[in-house]
Length: 139
Image 1: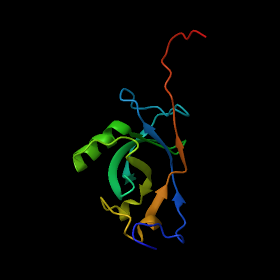
Image 2: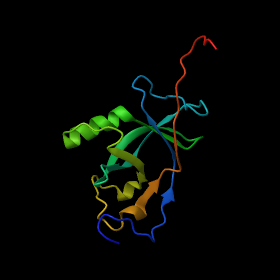
Image 3: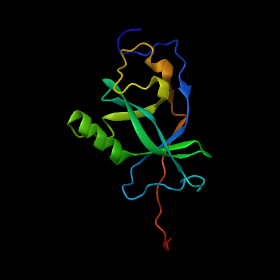
């Protein structure tokens, strides 16, 4: 494996469904899929930034154990990236690929670490939800 590449013999493991919450006025205290109450879960998110580096960010997210759905707030992630790198990031600049075991969590690990992807869990699915406002809707 060359520097920055993925070892082809590593089978990527999958964990969680994921939703990046783009709504600044909605925290999703109820799951958008099953409407059960969500819990808070703190875990490292693995983020690819500008195809140059990987950042592990220990982040508190909403979690629905019934749907195995992890919900992260886009605004909070972009604010942390701005603080860490001193520049504004948009969704085209980063990709939240999954999580990593807490026992393997090291903030800012780069892809040059040959064992890195052996410890990453990529998301099973990335979901998108659109809010509909309450009230009458004219057809």
